[in-house]
Image 1 (cartoon, rainbow, N blue to C red):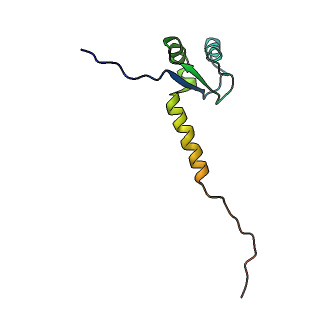
Image 2 (image 1 turned 120 degrees about the vertical axis):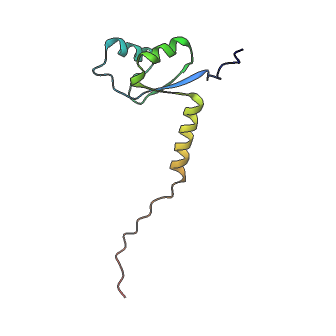
Image 3 (image 1 turned 90 degrees about the horizontal axis):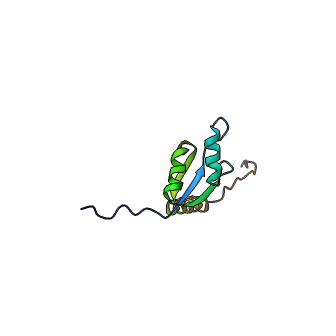
Amino acid sequence: MAGPGPAWSSRLAIQLVRGLPGTRELHRRTVRALGLRKMNQTVFRENTPTIRGMINQVKRLLSVETVEMHEARVKAEAEFRASRPPLVINHSPPTSS
């Protein structure tokens, strides 16, 4: 008796993390069909067998995470940047007493 499968996310965040020069033409067309045009660009696609097959074909060029994981990572990065105190540099010359 098999229970319900894992709860897959309905959407994926796909990011192009490697360049396309030197790759096969078929891989370039696949990346283009996913909607990626620039390095570090992120697109959101439905989690379908077709999209997963395209991702599997060019997996060495991509970073894939669920939308929930992507949003949590972006939020954590924003909080890290916001929590840092401003850098204060004092350029006054030393006083001699």
